[in-house]
Length: 270
Image 1 (cartoon, one colour):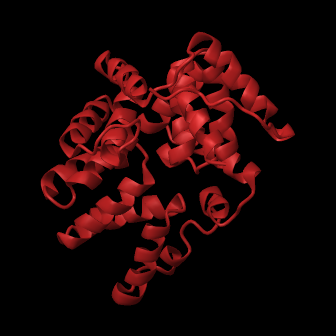
Image 2 (cartoon, one colour):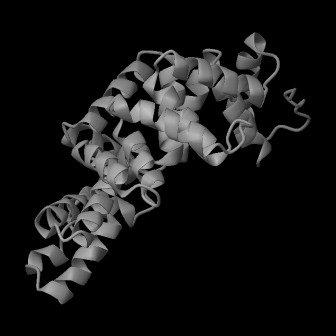
């Protein structure tokens, strides 16, 4: 069992984080990856889509002390994808891409329709490779319009190879996502996250909006899940460490063990 280590020397900028850990530790004196994983499994089994997605990623990447388990990863990603989580559908499609083209196309299409630009770009590429040029170009253009670098690069290549309209060379140039992608400005990154939520009336954005609403209403599970999206860059949201920490602290104050563990790992890594 992993115990929170005593803090001997605290720098001023760490006081907020330390106070958060103390508050959370009042309810949970010990933090254990095994307990974290067990709690996440419980949430996933209860039907929580965000927990299913996080558990699928955990098995894929070996988080929370879990061993790499591609079968379990696919099972939980599929559960979240079937609940219309576009990010999970994209991750599932990427996992299938080297073993089952039909399944990859199915899940990329679901995620693409949900507004996921990564899925739109990969679906466009796959359809072009199958000779389905019209639909493939439509998806590449949709992804490029949102600033996806893969799609923009593909369209620029196809412009020279197939004589695409010149407008395809400049897709995404003026999009907020393309500007933010080339910038380190936190305000632009935050604006991009908001833009992706309100601009696309899709399954992915609805999921994101619902999760944000629950987090703002004080749901510690939603707060933790939202923090993980800012950590991983889900739903087209660019990674934002400040927002990740903000939501982790709120969740930890409410006693969320996973948030306490995440904050502890961040502090110990400094």
